[in-house]
Structure formats: C-alpha cells, structure tokens
Amino acid sequence: MTLSKTTSKATRVKVSTRRKSKSVEKQSPKVDWFPEELEAFKPPERYTVSEWADNFRVLTNISAEPGRWRTNRTPYLKEPMDKFTDPLIEQIVLCFGAQLGKTETELNMIGYALDQTQSPVMMVYPTDAIAKFASDKRVQPMIKSVKSISDNFDENSKLLELDFNNGNYMVLVGANSPSSLSSRSIKYLFFDEIDKYPAFSGKEADPIKLAKERTKTFVDKKIVMVSTPTVESGNIWQALMNANERRQYYVPCPHCGVSQTLKFKQIKWPDEHNDNADMIRDTAYYECEHCGGHIYDKHKMEMLRHGTWEAVNASQSKVRSISYHLSSIYSPWVTFGDVAYEFKNSKGTPASLMNFINSWLAEPWKSAKTKSTQNLEFTQSEVPRGIVPQHAPLLIASVDVQQDHFWWEVRAYAHGVSSYLVDYGQASSWADLTEILIDREYPSEYGEARKIVRAGIDSGYRTDEVYQYCAQYPEVCVPVKGDSSHSPLAPPYKMSSIEKGVIGGMKLYVVNTDYWKDFIFARMVRPANEPGTIHLFKDCPEEYSEHLRSEEKQEIRNVKTGAVTVQWKPLTSHPTNHLLDTCVYNAMVADSVGVKYLPEYNPDTDEEDEDTDDEGFNADSRGWFS
Image 1: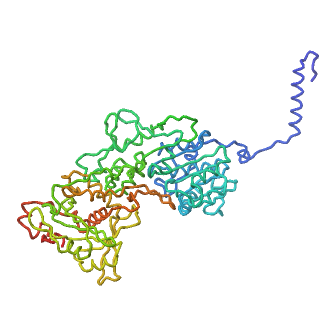
Image 2 (image 1 turned 90 degrees about the vertical axis):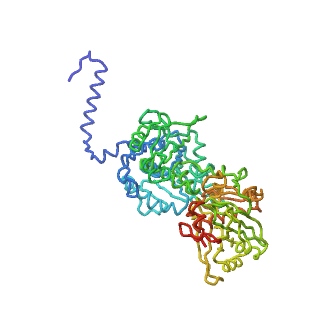
Image 3 (image 1 turned 45 degrees about the horizontal axis):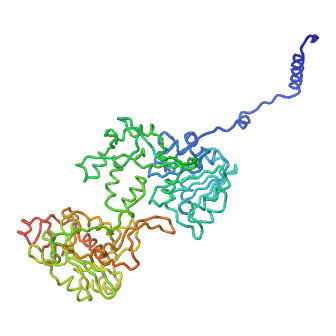
C-alpha cells in the first residue's frame, strides 16, 4: 500500500499503530482462561449486613425458626444491622427485650466481619463458662453453616480462639478474665448481656473499658453492645442514654395510619377477665392511643414491615454512637395476650415483676428509688390494743430473740389474709415468753377469749435454746430463720429437718425475708376496709412504726458476677428493726398454717355454731388450726 503525499500525518500514525498491533498479535499466543481463574479477578460484591445475612446465613435447629435467614421476618433488625457497615458509626447499642432476635443480630454482624473482612473479632460474655457454651452452641454452628467462612475455618482451633486460613481470628472471653481482655488488638468488638458483667475484674479496670482499650489502634473500629436492662445505673441503660442518637421503632395503626411506639399500657382486655390470667391471654388486644381502634395480633407483621426507626433526641455533635430501644411487644413470636399473661402472673412477687419489666418491657427496674419507707403512714384499725377483732379469730405470734430479752408480737387473721396487730412488747425470760405464747388468753370483741395457734421463734441466735423451747411446746412453737442468700428465685419459705439435739426431730422454717418485707409493706398502706390489709391497732405507739421504717430497698451489685439485685437493707449499722423481723415472721407463719383458706366471717352462722365451722376447723379457744 502506497501513501500519497497528501495523506495527513494523523492518518500515517494511525496506520502505523495498526501495523504494530497486528505484529504484536501475531507474536503473542492466545490465552484461554478457566471460569474459576476469571472469577478470581472479579471484585468482591459489597453487601450490607442484612443483605449478607439474607444471602448466606442459615439458622440452626436451636433457633426459633431454623432455616435460611429472612430479614423481613424481623424488619426492625434491618437498620441496626446495616449500621455496622456505616463508616461514620463507631458504636451500636441494642437495649432489647427477650425474643426479639438480638443474639442472632450479633451473630450476623460477626459472620459478616469474618466473611467480608480480614480483621480480628472479639466477643465478650459475662463469664468464661458462658463464653465456652456460646462458642460451642452458637458461634461455631453459625460459622459452619456459611460455606465461605467454613472453608477457611481451622478445625484445630481452640474453643475460645477461632483461627481461619485467610488470616482472620476470633476470640471469645469472659468479662471476669482480665488477662484475656487486655492481650490483643481488636477491630470488631462485641459485648453480650453487659448488665451481667462484674463491676471490676480483680484489680483491673471496668471490663468494658478494658476491652475497649483493645480497639484504639483501629480508626474504623466497631463496638456493639447488647443486653436487656436491669436498673438505671446498669451498663446497657447508661450506654443507651449516653449515645449520640437514641432511636425507637414507630409502627402505623392499621385503622388511622398514625405511627406510634408500642406501649404496655395500651394492651387491654375485658374487665370481667381481670381475675383469670388464661382468659386475659386469649382476649387481650392493643388499643391505638390516637383513634382507640382495637389492634390484634394478625395486624402486627404488617405494622412491623411498615415501621421506621426514628430519633427521639437531638444530637449536639456528629453521630458516632447510636442506640436502639425495643420491647418484647414488637416480637413476631409474642402475642399481646402473652405480654398481658406474663404481667398478670408476675405482678404478685417483686422478683417476677422485675424480670417482666427488664426482659419483656426492656425498661430498668426503679423500685429501689421509689420504695422509701420513711414517709409511709401505716393503716390502723378501730380495734383497741389487746383485743381480737370479731371477724379475725386466728391468732399467730412471732418472736425475735436477743441476747438477754425477746421482742414479740401477736396478730389476728381474717378472711382474705387481712391481719390485725393485737399486741407487742418485750419479754425478759423464757418463762415470760411462755405466759405470752402458751398461757395467755386474748379477749375478743365477741366475748370468747382466744389463744395463740402458732408461734414462730427466731433461731438465728441462741439456737440450741430456741430448739429446746420449741421441742417443749411443739403443738404451738416452731423455729424460724431468715435466709441470708437474698436470692430473687428463692421461695417464700422452705423447711428443713432438725435432728441433732432434738428428740424426735422438728422442722425449721427458712424465711425469704425480702419476699415477706415486700408483702407486708405493700399491704400496710392499703385502706382499712380493703381485703388483705395489714393493720396496726388503734393509736399504736410510734415505736412500732419506727422499727418498720428501719430498712429500705437498695440496689446491690455483686462484685464478682456483676448481677444487680434489689434487696432490703438497714439504714444504719445498728438498726432497731426487731419488730420488722417479728412482722415478717408472723406473715410467714400465718401462711404456713393456711391462713389464705380462712372462710369469710358470717356473724349469724358463726355465733350459732361455735364448735366447728363449715370447713371442719376446730373452733375452740386455741384456734382453728390446733
């Protein structure tokens, strides 16, 4: 091919380049790539955590709904999960109730970190024992259910140190192990159930602060904190309230369309079912706070899918930490009736009610700050001192044993577990006590004098003497002792056998004093005519009330376990609380003889048949349960 003189310079360059290209093509052999090799050059797909979970996560058989993960089953988890990939967010706080999927949310974030990044991960549990259980039953099954993570997992990993062939590693530690918390650098840090952490790890700092120190070298670190709350001073509630932005989940009413948060006070049921927990469970519904429309369980999923997280505070700075608050009312696996039923069955005992408020409503327990005894005015009856009310024929006594004297009180019980203080005082000897408990007859409003049916005597002090005295009068006297464990799960009382030093043996009643203090303080401020009220006698001396006011409820944190409980504690180091003890023992002893089964007093029939009542109880001067 011959180029004319008129051919432009650009054309000559183009032709020359084409010739060189053909020359190179002839010299270079053609390469045929395998699909697997081409796949290696493909850039990784970018997922949010919710997208990753929907694509790869498989729930094991220990989950409520085994099988492939579906974020649309729990729509309220989408935003918290996706904040994990938001480069502006450093800390995510989930203050959630039970049965909402918070544990699976953490596992999704961990799975994403192990699969999509090459960065160290740490998960902190309350104790090493819980960490070992979670590794075996939760974390490793999650790892093995995702092929891309499982292929890199080193099967020779230790239970609490998981290694991966791509350079990743994950450690699981207990908050009670300072050395494990401070031994390595971490980019992704997870805390589980942080309100159960010990306050301090031996001589080290707070375990949460100690673990956070491990993330200082990573500018793009992520810290995730998850727990149900306990008290306002607890770790999760403080983290929730101190976040730059706090968010709550708003759902639209199916009737009026107005968005609102779900609140326990809006769960309603027919009044005629107030005394039947099972009927409440079957008939409860949610009442819209705007239009009053009845919202049923069938509406919940559609409401959740159209729900949105909204900030409830205005951040004064850049949002680096974000917190989410959600109660179990939102759970797809919990009905409105379940919540009402749990409340109905929990409100009778403080420990159960605390669990309901913490684990179901995701709210902190506040009773320790509202149950002050100092301003309480206790209910008095119109019956004078030393007289048994006409409708309360069952007499119970209780004794607090001191080094050289005894405090005692006598109460009369009526239908509905109402009680009336008849008399109290001090005795200086066992002989004086015998006159009060065994020999004395107490006049009643209707004429016939009554005797004490049962007397509980404190055996925590001068124990052998108490046992011998109770063995001398076994038909009336029983030894009692306060339970020092303060366990919220302890029963109101329990019995144990005493064999040593007692001919024929006897039963010792171990009393959950916190339970009975809650019981008596709740009933001592009721109106005088209300069933179940605990009364003082007319013009009762202030001395008795001062003994009752000697203790208050306080928040107690276990230094070793970090668990927070609410216990009754003396206000001074040497409290004058002896009559509080006798009142507690009296209520427990009355319960042990079946006071709750006392029939309602009928003046006509009871006066006609003084020997035996309708239930067959002996009605002589000793009482119905002699």
